[in-house]
Image (tube, rainbow over all chains, first blue to last red; front, side, top):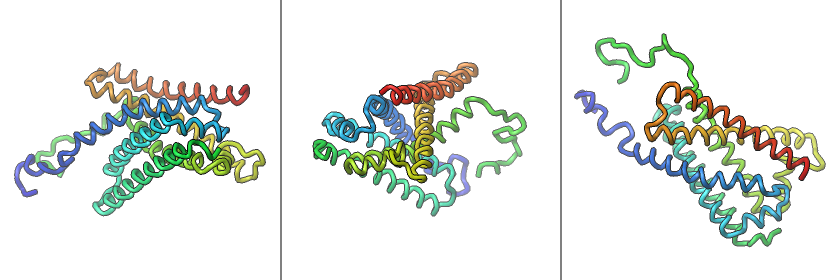
Length: 130
Length: 147
């Protein structure tokens, strides 16, 4: 860091040149969420959610399964970015912050994998379990 | 470090004239609802999805815990109420974060920073989220009664 000018002391720190990418990805996944979660919520309201067979038939439709997988990717990507900002703002100390970011990645990637696997399981069994 | 510049100049925010405003409320609620959806909403979704994939018995167990248990034990009587509270909360958080997010997309274009316009849309985000949540749950209640 040195004892130079104010500019010299901050150069290379801060967002480390990744700030714009983070910002843009948050907006792009926000647009993805707008379309995909909007479709999902309307679908839930129209489905007889108490009827396992009916919901399974809906989810096993290839276009629906594809939409659900896209939604899981968009949502978990978006929530990883958002929770990262919260951690960066509120978790202090390098070790604690690093641990929180590692746990966040386990949660976001693990959750998305769990969701995608469940959708694939529904789609590839063709709703036969009903 | 910030705050240690020479000269003793006044630092922002000027706490003497600090006043709570709708734009500040909508900002912190964007974060609260976003983080709430990211943790509670995502986990509820994965729980539902996993139960759906696991079969009719697992799905029935999910419904009995969160929504309605036909032969309700005392534990499920409590979780059925909690489940509905959480679902109403998630519905509100979804609309609050959605409308607030749309506001942010507009602000990203550089529009809507005039004091009165900014204040108006901040308030409308709160009003819209409450109205949309009420509309969804009135629809669900009406379907449950007639459907």
